[in-house]
Image (cartoon, rainbow, N blue to C red; front, top):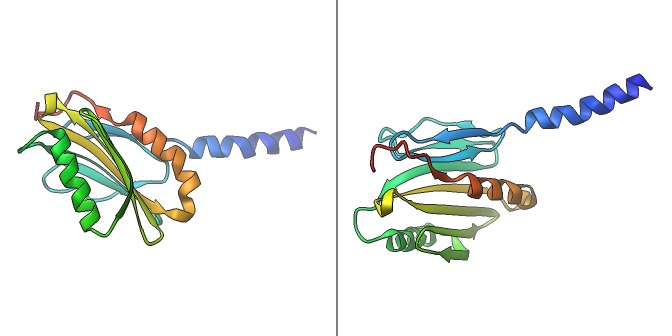
Length: 159
């Protein structure tokens, strides 16, 4: 009986340990978000605007950007246009003065983007998650966690 109990505990403990989420804070813009388990950081860009993470089947980018012309909503509209021009068929979009989300499909891939207004409207913070349509159910919870964790750490030097 003890052996069976030990096996059950081991089976349930392993996924809990493997499910450790990381956390990323961008020093330049102060955008922050949780990073799902298994996503490995890539080489950061020279301009320091964010960080990319990847698994064999998915990619995540967390970044900040200056709003040089217009306001948050006009920058989001431009980014959605670029997404469409990059071949993504936009399937969902919601835009408010403080946050925006959109997703698209290209072939068997899904893209989900969330952006937030930061620094009184002078910057935005965002994440982009690309994954296989076959993994959609598994990534629904990942998207939810990313959306709730995306924020302004208040540490960016751009404010």
